[in-house]
Image (cartoon, rainbow, N blue to C red; front, side, top):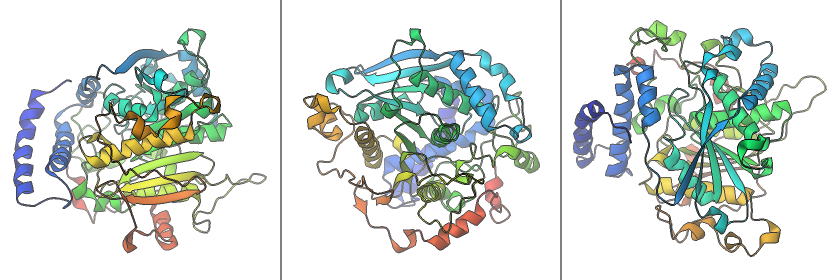
Length: 492
């Protein structure tokens, strides 16, 4: 794993300050143990320190940073053919027709396309001996759309692949700001085409979409939803399901938790970096410059395109079967809740769908939303915490449920056991004997809270989302928050 000694030196004061605060019970949430408190504080400070680096330096460092995989994991590098990317471009060009000015750049002429679209397959070496089902996860890594890599997220991918009894493909999609929207979405769609229509030299047969789960964390969760919308709108075969960990679905940061949950999350008040050729913001201390380009991922004019901010789509039905987790303490919590309700159409009187003449609204999307007490953004990365293990385990159980063992292979090992039971002998995540598995197959919408011990609990009065709350949130969508009320959010 790549380590920058300068970062370690800069984070040392934060380490001791956090340690002192924890001893003094000065903790953002009383349920946090010392390891989680340190993990969140150090990650928050690391992201703040990025202002001392250029975007290019930040990307390069994080592209090299990864944990080595254990001997039980098989990793195989691959390259998605350029023909798949060309097919994806044609689809996007059709769906974005008439919005070229909003998109803001000639994305089909991106010079970064000269670099191959690389990825890697990850699976347990004994997978084929353990299951007769050919489950495939297309995993889309997070990183605010401008940093991260498949290798960096491998430590998470291999865990969910293990619990899901699956093999996983993850790609290094093009990053912003060098390649803004829709470059990343083109690459993700290309990877999907690679799975269902592989070239002869790919080394595997075409994969039935019914055996594919698209999955992502944070920005990767946003791309997961956007990909499903693209497939739906283009009339293409959709995957059997989607899994999203803390998906980033609203690039306006419209909803209350984005400001209210600052103390219990590590997401900074905007990502800022030193001036460089790639950086559209030449002086991050200039608030006007920062507001003219709020997100590296897309020009301001493109932020309300539904494939950029999926939560703004008029109709979020017809997206199949979604499993979503978020932290109750994270800044993106409310957009996950709002999206889940809007997609499942829990309150049709709130979520009015304006369809063109002669068309009909899509059916409600099936959504299972789990909200974990006290947890920050993509808490699964804190693998030492019980909530992380619980959420990873539940994600794997969901994948096993939507892609079950073949009926004619009833004697296969996994057909007799639950995923948690089966992998318990080799997992590095502790398993509770009384792990609750969901039994809500007939429900269109399920929202549950999970306590710090991984148990379901009843929603408290203030957590019950009513129509009036959703109606108020609908009015906020597509608008930047009033930062005059929160000037601290402009601090770099």
